[in-house]
Every structure is written in C-alpha cells, then in structure tokens.
Length: 281
Image 1 (cartoon, helix red, strand yellow):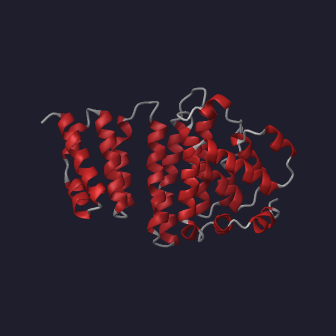
Image 2 (cartoon, one colour; image 1 turned 90 degrees about the horizontal axis):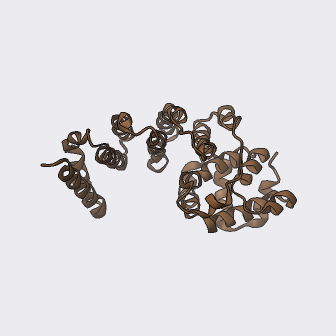
C-alpha cells in the first residue's frame, strides 16, 4: 500500500468516527499504527498526528494528545514550527471543557508552557513577526493567568509593541488569522486583572477607528465598539469569543472577573458593564 493510500485510509477512518460520533470507531483509529509509515511524508504524517491528538483529547487523554504532537515536531518545516507548537499547546486547553477540577486544570495547562516557550524561539522573521509574537503572548498569558501566575502573565506583554494591524492585512481574511483567532485570550487577561493599560493597548492593535481611540473616554464604550467592529470584520475573532462564552462557568474558577464579564455580555446588561469597567485601573 502506498503512503498516500495509508494516509487516505486513516483520514477516512478518523472522519467516520467523528461524523458518526462513535467512540469505538475513534478508538479503533487510535489503535492503528500504520501512520508511522508516513514519517517520511511530513504533510501526511503531521496531519494524521494532529487527528490522533484530537481523538485522544475527545477521551480526555491530553497527555497522550501531547505525545502525538511531540512525535511530529522534528518533521515540521522551519516556517511552520511555531504554528505547530501553538496548536500543540492549545490542545491542553481542552481541559477547560473536560472540567476535572482546578488542580487538574493547573497540571494540564502547565504542560503547555514549555511548548509555547519553544514556539517563541521558532518564530519566523517576516513582516508579521510582531503579530505572531503577540499571538503567542496572548495565549501564554492566558495560560499563566489560568494557573494563577498573575505577574508572569502580565510580564508576557513587557516587550510587545502593540502595533495596529495594517488595514490591508485587516481586510485580507486570509491574513493574520491566528492573531484574531486567539485575541480574546489576551482580552481575557486584561479584563480579569482589570488592567486598563493592557486593555487599551490590545484594543489599539485591532481598532479601525483612530478617532474613537483618541477621544472616547468611557472605557466600556471604547471596548464594546471596538469589539463589535472586529466581530464584523473577522469571523475567527467572534468564533473564539463565542467559544469562551460557552465555557464561562468553567472559566469562573480561575478567572472570576472575566467570567462575570461574559455573563453580563450574555445578559446585555450595559449599565452593569459600564460599572464593571469603571473598576479598571
């Protein structure tokens, strides 16, 4: 059997299990070991490893998911290593949905930190490097916040430039997708710690309205109008925001202020939100 046929069979098996939501089929997929024959074909090998990691995550086996990612790191291209590392680290955040308690969450999320540190070292040097760096900073700060490391979480932004996204990149839906897809994590950190400077800096990066940034003195109005504008422009941003909203009750144990904010947003209680944002310092 050719490597391409092995790859296609594995993808078909995985997709069948996911589509039918059948744990038995998914476990059978994991019990297959033909994927190791794909090691000399990185494009096939890496995709199957990520499918295997996702499958392990469905069973709550996040350490096993991490091991699958680890197998593929050396097969990544130089330019793709940081993205692979980001996806690897994000696999551990599935613990929020599994919800096995705060101690387990801390244990699992701690596994993401060295992976993110390596991803930072693997960042490519191109025109968007500072936005890739901010993406990793947002994710890492969110993880650090979730494990109770406030000072380290805020320190992630020490060397960030907070450059506004260029209009052409903003309008190009294929550009900077990872930045927008994980931006809510950074906003969560600023909101949880009620850090007005960090929040303003994060809003500056994604705002399209310079006049609003310069003249609006009401923090909630500035935040909300920037949020809605970004929702309209970037689908990946609203997708993550909605995902956070769905797990707000599970986030509450590690980020009560952010969870409170999400609850108020859900209730559309703008008066209470205005009061909430007035506590920022």
